[in-house]
Length: 267
Image (cartoon, rainbow, N blue to C red):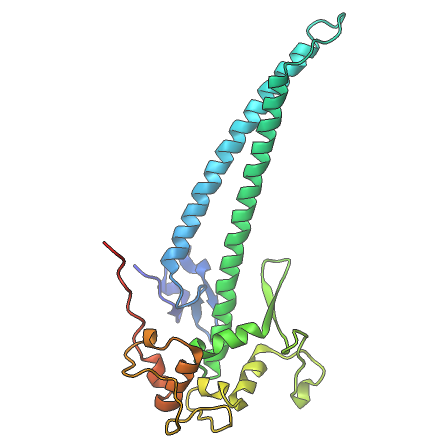
């Protein structure tokens, strides 16, 4: 059974699942994953990672055992007769120890890399989920605004496993608030998004906002990039086409478009 994305109370789910929800600030609890994300794929990735980790652990254990046996054999050869010079160690044994050590380190590095990649992927899902919440709160359309907002936000990791979002200007430098009550303080994501409501083009990415600036296209003007007979999100290939659709039909109509159809592969 699919998990609900939003709960009024944690009592609605089993106790073992409550850690997967976080408070939204308005008394509700939201599933800690991006709503549009294929959660099933993420779960499969986690299962695959656990399998690879187990296999890597088994290989490391086997490699350690081989190393211990070979090192014991080397020491036995060296101390077999203290009155005589230690015999020359068979080069094949030394080579085997070296190969086993290299293999073990390589497998350790592979597990560490896969672990880091998985953590970054999960963090990116959480970041996009938070940004989507900010955009929606400002009556924005995430499908339009997300790429631009994500470009302006830097993610700073914390020691406790969390992260902070830092707003940057177009030159990649920290952006400061333009509000009179926060002059000199870092700009927050909410203020950043609100600023786009006044932008000639990006203002079309908000519900109920019509842009008439020099950079905006109108429903009655020429040069629209819209294809004919838009039936799903798959018909809108570029951000410009999405913006033109919202300009002509409204953000609500855009959000109600069905998803792009899945094209079946060759049988």
